[in-house]
Image 1 (cartoon, rainbow, N blue to C red):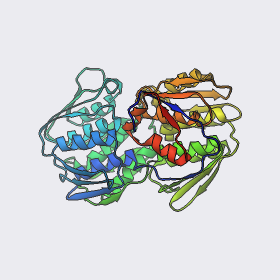
Image 2: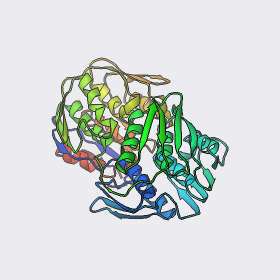
Image 3: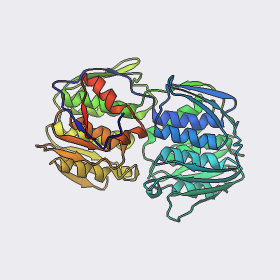
Image 4: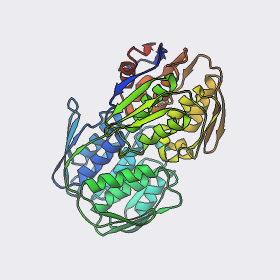
Length: 434
């Protein structure tokens, strides 16, 4: 995809209909890489995502002494696990703005024996990691945010993760919990991990637990949000990676917005990723959903506004916000305050850009209400956030005059997004303004 400064989105002439298989899931790829790195023997991951976020993870694992071979053409990675013992004793890891990478790697480094520094770009230095650092510190690891603001850079000095009773806050991100869960089998003792307060995005934790189990880990949950993990080793294996359900949301939304029919292959109701349930939000808005053994189809119908709690599938909230302008009646998106701590403040960013298009939008601490209405031309600021670019491009499929600034930000998770969207639409849907 071109690194042009902006793309003008070209409206389609009719309903978007077709079949597509998005690239591999970022969430699954990065979890599988961490677990495979700790496993005994080799693991072979198929259908993996090639993107900036996964490149950051691979580079960091290699700096920690983990051998990772990436065959981009065949979408495979081979990981030679360390058996729970990281060989490198001194490493500096640069994680760009990949929240999953820096959080997962911080916990992984805590299982090592040495000194590890983790940092990222300017936005990463604004994204909180304090709850994870606090948990590791209480566990006996020397862990700190070196600027003293509960955000990266992070410094880990460790002689291994002791284990025992751990607590972690869950109201800002579920990734702190996932990071500790994946590292826990490598602790010297069994781990009892409890979540303090609310846990956001629980489906992502369920995904973590399932991947751990697929690599042979035994985990119990004696009570809600309390996890017992024995000292054990993961077993290397071959693991197919599902298509990315968050990415699939854009194609389902294209069907909803244009009244088309889109089938995504490789994802069904039984997918590991909770974001597949985005289609149920579209169903509430009036679309028809068909579940198959290895596919999901959305048929667009006249849309109505809804009131919806998107805490569990917040990575698709921006997608729904860009479907909402085409509904009859307002749409209220609730319980997504933690989106403010993502690649950008996603709540305010969505509100501001919908208003830039001329829509009436109310902002709340936990979300927004979007009122359909006439829209005018606008250049959309993407805030270096891949999901802003991918979501707002959908509005341009029906409304002329949408320009996406910095479309190259999609390289974070989906470098070929605009080309794949064009293939699905049967026509080129963007024009470069170089």
